[in-house]
Amino acid sequence: MYSSSSSPDKDENDLKVSESTYKLPIIDLKSFKSGEDREKVAKEINDACKRHGFFYIAGHGIEEELIDRLDSVSRQFFALDEQEKLKIRMELGGSAWRGYFPLGGELTSNRPDWKEGLYFGTELQDTHPLVVSKTPVHGRNLFPDESMVPTMSQIVLEYIEKVTQLGHVVMEAIALSLGVPSDYFYSLYTQDPLILFRIFNYRSQVIPDGMDVRWGVGEHTDYGLLTILYQDDIGGLQVKVGGEGWIKAPPIKNTFVCNIGDMLDRMTGGLYKSTPHRVALNTSGRHRLSFPLFFDPNFFTQVQPIDGISIGQDDSHQRWDKSNVHEFQGTYGDYLINKVSQVFPQLKQNINNTQQQRSE
Ligand SMILES: O=C(O)CCC(=O)C(=O)O
Ligand SMILES: [Fe+2]
Image (cartoon, rainbow, N blue to C red; front, side, top):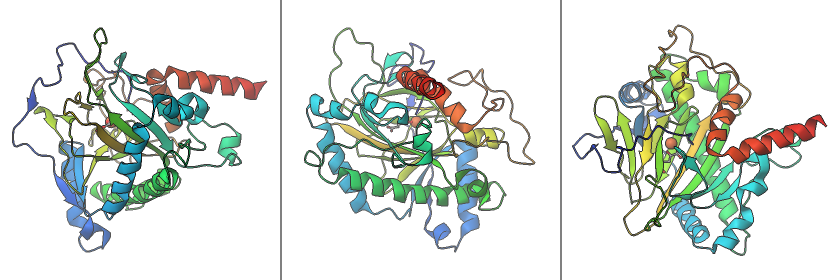
């Protein structure tokens, strides 16, 4: 999830990406989940978040078989004719912000990203009060016809459910890593978290002449608390770590990549930074699939700094979006919609239309 980036012209795909032995840490959650060694894991998370804002998690308990099934139905979907895929295009999802967007349908840095994708979130029925009241980014998912991609809906919903549970566990570890009670985030922000889930396909193909495309996804930070990303074996994710420049975050079997978002940066007064990242153009000859799940504060909560943590310094001059996350006033929903409208002007339009209909 991202908004427009500064992406200066000198930022070519392979420029200054360190090939060195620098590695992001892998944190094994097994002993945290079993309760055996929570302090050790909390300490590792503390180090990782202070240094990079990115880490891998192993021992997460999500079955490989579920991920394989998700990968397989996603490939089936992206292999369909464009016409078929467009039957669930995002415009049909309205302000719920769900559905398919084609290649070039999302802008970063006012340039199209070289990816197509599917947008999902927590499944809410049309009768749910938040759907009845047309709350943005809440609603029913759009799935391909069962005859086209059998079982995709069940697999996606099962994956969202399980990775959301994992998100609660990682947030407990993050709470302990900050010296607050393990249920700190749950009790204040994530009892009913905002969950958005994407499936991206970064096609490996030559960019047509005249199209100004530089990245799979341009430089950005994520907006919420925690992103849990599964990526296939192709690679391309790059992370900007302080002092080191851009480094690669390659796929590691049986792990997820986690990174913290702007709201955790805000709550920790910048102690845990939301770290910029981007995805290089895919030239591997095979499609690259990635599956980020955004585990975010409840839409209606106002995200405040943790008691006792000093208010973060204004770092907007260094940030890709030139904004100051410490200064923001409003709910998480306000923050999100404002950001998202920059990449999907159409969503803002849908929300405005909905609000207008409501007031008529
Ligand atoms: O596809 C990836 O590896 C990363 C995607 C990403 O950064 C995002 O969706 O926010
Ligand atoms: Fe991201």
